[in-house]
Amino acid sequence: MEQTETRKRIFSAVQPSGNLTLGNYLGALKNWADLQDEFECIYCVADLHAITVRQEPAELRKKSLDTLALYLASGIDPQKATFFLQSHVPEHTQLSWVLGCNTMFGELSRMTQFKDKSQKHADNINAGLFTYPVLMAADILLYQADLVPVGSDQKQHIELARDIAQRFNGAYSPTFTVPEAYILKSSARIMSLAEPERKMSKSDPNVNASIFMLDKKDDIIRKFKRAVTDSEARVAADPTRPGIYNLVNIYSCLTGKTSEETEREFEGKGYGDFKVAVGEVCADALSGLQAEFARLTKDKGYLDGILREGTEKASYIARKTVSKVYRKVGFYQGK
Ligand code: TYM
Image 1 (cartoon, helix red, strand yellow):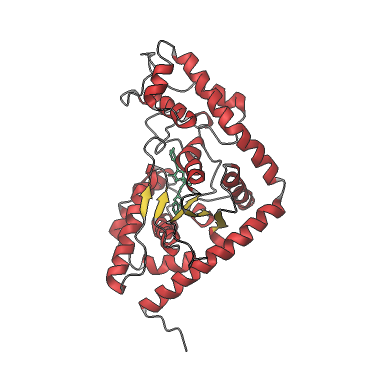
Image 2: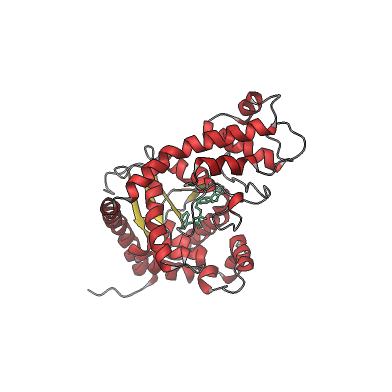
């Protein structure tokens, strides 16, 4: 497979730590599907990352397979892309240790996600939460990925992965491809419907702040109708008015229109009409995906088959990288 492949390689992942949101869909999954013809794509369900926050084991098991089903339902074709669960390829943790020994305490202390999550989970600031970006660097570097399509919240982690790769390459001779973040401007940061200054997040306790990929149409419309906006009542992509800015952005991402086209379409119309229109296009965009998700989750045998095949392909690449890294750092490999 590797010898004949000339396309650039993409790697990305989602944590199966909650219900996936419209932010995950627009910021990640939808783009992943759009990239599958042009690139060699490897998509992982990051279950090891998920346990940095306490998970209920049965839920984690279910969410892991549901996340895979959502990847597929988003239109990513298993004939074209490779899918697997992070815990099925032990090389992730093996490489993570070596990279951890090439990552500085100060670098990890500066990660904003660590600071945010330690505040949110003050009773469980575990070592895994702190070293999380090292495991993420291992995910990416293991596959020698060129590009990593993510939302902008992951940019800092990918910059760290680049720094670690460069440091290792400098110390031990070129070993890793130095990856680049691939972030689309329009969908980089979908904001909360309740507090539009904050990103929409699957861990937000306020269910009205997020649209979930599996929400029913009525709930989607209701949530958009009550989305926080302002009193100016003019539909505009105005970043100083974050609520309406976010809705224009969501509408534009879902319809493929530019913000200017969206503004023109709703000129002279009030927020009420616009919010219903956003809800309608969102529900339409998600309805086919939801039907496909329901079909796929009834067929665990099929999903397991995709994982088996994906794990095999991923492991082949991962083993090669770890063996090279072990050799370079000086681990005796026998005769
Ligand atoms: P996670 O699970 O938080 O999010 C998965 C993907 O969704 C994007 N995203 C958003 N994009 C736009 N607007 C939002 N409101 C929004 N919320 C989430 C994220 O940027 C991400 O692309 N650490 C990663 C998972 C991971 C990973 C990796 C990613 C583990 N290993 C290796 C890339 C490469 C995470 O927690 O994503």
